[in-house]
Length: 91
Image (tube, rainbow, N blue to C red; front, side, top):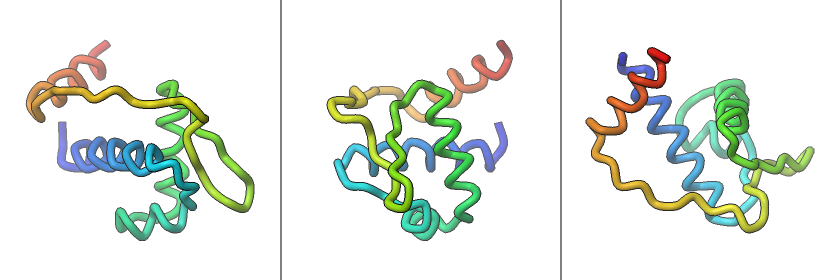
């Protein structure tokens, strides 16, 4: 796994954490927070949606998680998480 993959995984996790705050977040706000382009945020949101995260998009306002959706805490070390990602890529 290269450094870009690690950064992306960290960013995706952080976006999920931000979305759990119950606020509506714009792609511009997220892009500034993570120092990436708005297009990168669009791609990240698509990745999360394809992974089954129920993201609600309100045109002209931003993103939020569907009501009632919570991500349970995961207790993996960074090495364990990286191993799972590597295995998933092999499949």
